[in-house]
Length: 164
Image (cartoon, rainbow, N blue to C red):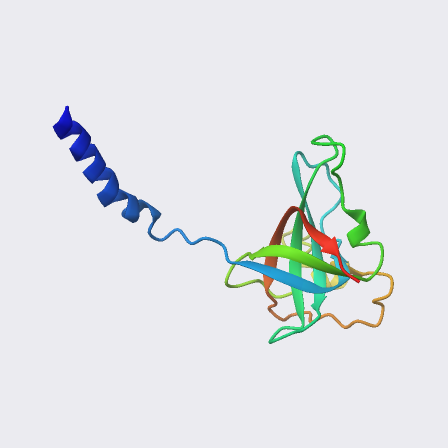
């Protein structure tokens, strides 16, 4: 029995580093800035439990990038009575603090239009011209960096607050 316990402990001690090797924990960051746009490219649909809202945030103190995409997760109305769409984030431009994690090392370029493919498989995105991002009230003069890669972050439910 002692031999079995010792071999099990040795096995765990030797294998555990190999199992956890390569698993990268997301880097946590604090983002402070003004929400200037909301993603409108996905048709309204029901979500169950965890839902999402994508925002463009203009950073208060940019180092390299002026804008970032913040993907805010929220709980549906059925999960808890104090949850639901955080509409206060998109009512108008306002400063917010987000406790976020880096979503990936490379983000796709910020798209100006919703991608549209016709029944023949032809890309008619530009012809249709359906805007992917809606500027919020107070941000009408903003010029979003369409076509540029900007960092993307994920925010867990409730991990944001208004700052004045």
